[in-house]
Amino acid sequence: MTFDRRNFLTACSRMGVASALFPGALYTLAAQAQEADGADESKPPKITPEMIDQAAEIAGVGPFTDEQKKMMIDGLVDQNGSMKAIRKLKLPNSVAPAFVFHPQASRGHVLKAPTTIHVLGPKTGAVHLGMTGWTADESATAPANIDDLAFAGVSHLASLMKARKISSVELTRMYLARLKKYDPLLHFTVTLTEDRALKQAAAADAEIAAGKYRGPLHGIPWGAKDLLAVKGYPTTWGAGGFEHQEIDEDATVVQRLDEAGAVLVAKLTLGALAMGDKWFGGQTRNPWNPNQGSSGSSAGPASAVAAGCVGFAIGSETLGSISSPSTRCGDSGLRPSFGLVPRTGAMALSWTMDKLGPICRSAEDCALVLDAIWGPDGQDTSVYPLMQYHWDPALDWRKLRIGYLKSEFDAPKPFEATKQTQGESPEAKKKREERDAQRQIRWQRNAYDHKFDVTALEKLKQMGVDLIPVELPKLPYGAMTPLLTAEAAAAFDELTTSGRDKLLTEQGPYDWPNDFRVARFYPAVEYIQANRARTLAVQQVSALFEKVDVIVTPTNGEQLVATNLTGHPALIVPNGLRGDDAPKPPKVDNGFEDNIGGPGTPVSITFLAGLYEDAKLAAFGKAYQEATGFEKLHPKLG
Image (tube, rainbow, N blue to C red; front, side):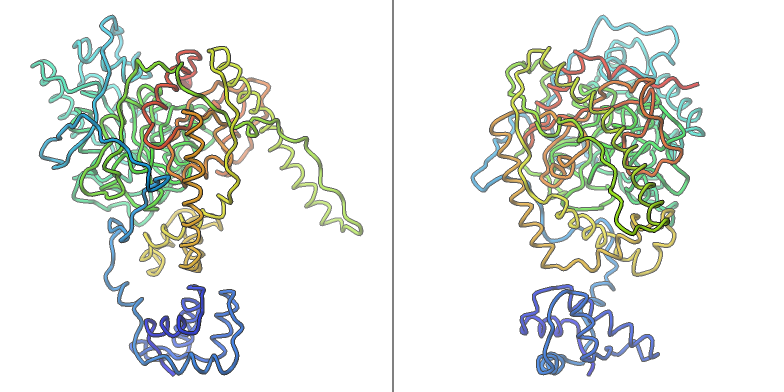
């Protein structure tokens, strides 16, 4: 009997088949049988009781009796399914689902409306909320050689720019020259936007000379992760098959940085479709150890900032893509609260988890950049209309309540080798010993880096911080992460169904092509259940910030997954360099671990805050950096 998918779903529902995976699997089995038989694909495929049994086993439902199977088949009609009709729409990546995630802890939690409204120019047609508290350092002096400013922070560059001690054109030419010089080593550039940059820089100099100063980003060169659309240039998403894609708009954050007077000098690399550091042009490298990747997926922004090739950059994070490369490359990265920065014009990977944020040299730089890009744009409905952000560099951080995830700072448990089993074969013994050797190396690296985490707590105590122990709520955060791959598989549905996923550079079991295929078997019911669990996570993690204002934590670990799910902001800052006694790096960077840099490479620490308390977070990060100075360290490039 032939069938229609829509009516089949209805029939399954009437039979009480709870798993949404079952009808999808059954429909696929029937379609495959139709193709194998060479049947007319314009007609609905047939379905048999045997197919129902196979699909039920895949979906984990049933088993069904012969009578139930007969009733299900009899309830189906001879029409084609709704799935094909939806696919015919050819939905572009920019079309979001008809639901919006807002990480509100409870219905009764109301945020106050900001008091200052900045209306942007005609390019955005949107309202931007925010006001910076930055003041220029009038004592700042310019070096004789402009190249000596390569690693200077935004605030210092802005002070020189405002006082006309340097020009935007000469600063832009310097950064363009460095991008060209170091790209062959680090592979961080997809496209130079040289013509656009030089025109912007000349305009900035003219405006500043005329007394029309726009603020601390005016005339400062920056780089965009190449998932941000820029009119007139390719937006490649780092992926094979998209090398020549052009999107005829500027992303909202690009428009806002244009309005702030910043100068876009390059579109920087990202791992293909925002995974890792491998893109269609190769692998982006870590300036501290060019034999390793820079990590990802904000690979190019992190590498270029660390190498002194842009004043700042914009990256994105869904599940570690600012945190991880900022750690590897020794940058300061601010992953904003979900819904603070509009993503209009950015590639969608997960509509409920994607966040755009700055990667800079310091926490203060991150705060200044965030001030230019936050607030509703009238297009990205995930941007909460009543959030707040006001950067106050004079905030008295000593009045903040500082917590720390106590158990995360516990020393790693002593390494124990796997016990030999009775009757173990020589081959099994060899494999066990190889696994143990890898586990021991991993333990040694974790034990070594743990010293830096503990030292950070000691430094905070020296600063007069009274640390309050807290713990992350005990929830299965990892079990909620299939939400990400399910949304990503939908965002790139046509890539999978068309077979164009073969064009992506990486094709391993943990890469997007396989992840997208696996995600198609994730039941809709389980997706909803995971979102319900996520509601608990938002509520319980938010409750921590009723006790403390900021939480200190090691960068890696469960908090990274938890806070990406709950939408809480994170500031990742450098926390020193590994010594000559650090465990040696592996010969091959597998892309899964951030702590493999070896001697002379950076480590990080992370600060967390409540939803939309990003400015408070940056203020505390600024205080920590003033006490440590780690943000001033930079790699020695030839």
